[in-house]
Length: 87
Image (cartoon, rainbow, N blue to C red; front, side):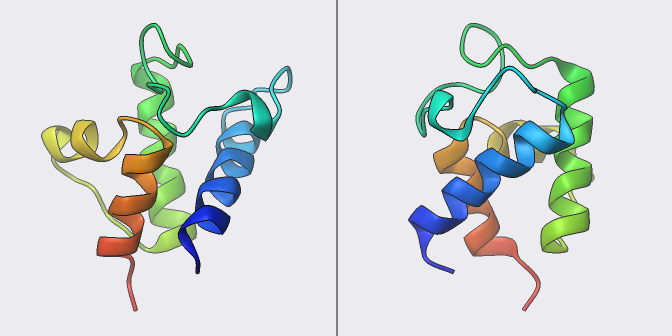
């Protein structure tokens, strides 16, 4: 999948998985931090995103440090998926 299409798909999935009904994919910037001052997600949301990666892309993140590296923003998530997705 082309990277831009993957990023758009991720935005839609994040909105659906986390039930962020007040957001649209256009509201989420590729380089905006997902946690803290950016999108404002919390630790529970990070667990949901790890489940999303497992369910949708076959990527199993067990190490919290690895999760923090992969879930910085949309760009890093897309790069991580492209690199680790099960073939």
